[in-house]
Length: 432
Image (cartoon, rainbow, N blue to C red; front, side, top):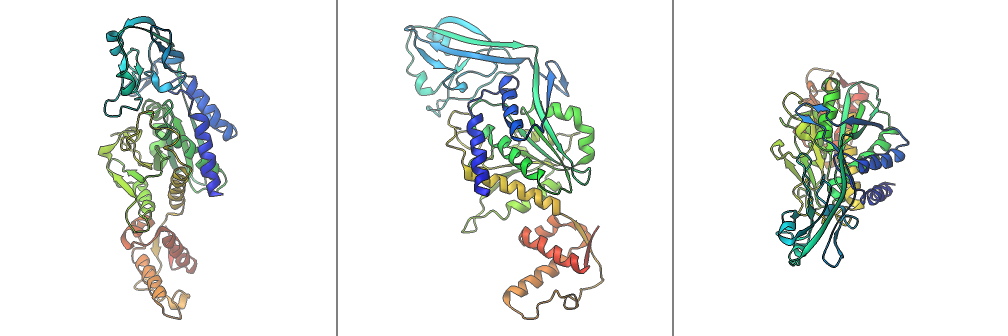
């Protein structure tokens, strides 16, 4: 069944990959419609008008793009938005003009260091137009006239986002945030929404202690809009939160810590990732401080917002060479990578659901034998189990939660929860 989840998520990504998304527009609506059908219409979809003020930011005009190309003097299309939507600078204004090569060069973007890649370029807040090409292609251009055509509109419209509240036993919330605002780049754009959608399906089938607030937003402006409308209740209720982005490749895992680095989200994610080592016991994950931020954790951790949010990723954005280029394609994302990210986040959520702070119910060292907790035959394995049990009890002082204890006594999270269950059944410890 687990492998099927990876295959299913990859199929969603393949369906969504060709759609041209941006901060606003029909591509975003089409993407949310697709995900909402998977979720049987459970997403709440919102439209926020151009000009809406979200703290220090303003919702821009809506952008509609229908077609764009460059033709040479022979009338041949040499650059075509229909072939790859990265060929157009995002939010390009309409144009229909014939210009010289020298003039055209002022509107072309390429990457000399990655000559086979089309760069991802946008201009959301200053009106301009342009095309993106590979450096190798750019070097083939010769003097002559070029016909540049962009059929686009910028108009007072709206920005689209969605959320879903999954009610649990308590009003305390776990927050999941993912974004959709990029054209055809695979790992940077689509694994976040795909993995989040699969997690929603799983959460719907589980008995939940926490309530889950889950959002799909355009990056930066979308998270600011959501905070501007929901900050008060989120500050009251959010226990831990996770930005889910760049979770499709199969190279590593990454954790970007909260601003102060000591929230429940930090502890939970770290507890799970510590167990992800390879067969040679080498670390297969990378930790980043808040100083390396670059996605929506910037907003959730900003002073005055101060939500307990970290980012969980495979290879971190900006750290893989294909980032923000056409090389970030469907070959970079794998079913195994998606499944790994899904399992890490699922296990982190499960750990949060099980997390407790315990108080031991006797003074001094407890007598394990009379409670049936001491092995009647002594082996190396049983010795380790007794040691772990006694170490666990040593920190059941009503001040340390299970992530604190796991960090101190260094046992697996599964063994930790198993130990707690045994001890709680005997009445030796009690959740407070």
